[in-house]
Length: 314
Image (cartoon, rainbow, N blue to C red):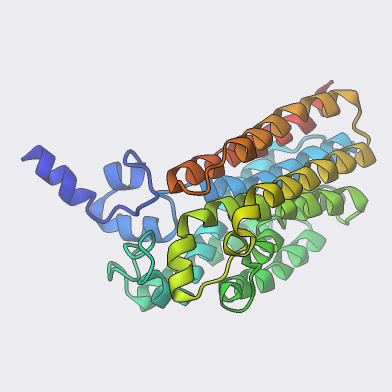
């Protein structure tokens, strides 16, 4: 009986969510559709949105702002990443409901499966966006307007897979915005280092989201959804290598422009090794292989952030 109850509780588990994820195993039943809508059963996206913010704070710390490595700002950025990733996913699912119904990996999402109505999803979107706004207004005026400017990219991203082979580029433009925000929160303006960091984060995002899109190549081809994974085809490994290499180069350039030295450069070997492992071991015919390598980018973001932090401390 206990086993049957467990199966019933997890009957709506999304295909790429871990069987041990906290939403499907521990969250109140009535909350689960909304937590799934915000992708909190798959929190990797929260981290991938957060890490450019954390990297940027680390970069700013290397450049020695008056308040050093700002832990308070780091906490605010994590809260912001949590709710704005959820808001972005909710908006994406509202736009993509008809597409998600046709893709095996996404058809159990709350909207296409009927767990949540479109009206409920819109209300949930507004609630998350309001929390994000409360976080944003804790920063200086320049940063507030910079944050508002990102909403245009967030709004257009869900439509890009319909009109361009490069939706991953537009995801990178939106998802990497924190690379600008972290610096501006400390200095109240932008200089070359955060712009280089942002450009590197865009290339990183194109690389890891191409790997992620490998899971959906067959379904995307059937329904006409475009992606860099479909565009690159057999050249995916080589092109992802170029994007990752470009990201590392731009991050190193950003750090050195901000004043980082040999400690930072040596520390950057760690994220480089993780990225090399991803492309060297990528199996384009295995969705499980692609998903594991996509998840490894959480450690890339952590390693780059720590590289800046170690440089700042020593």
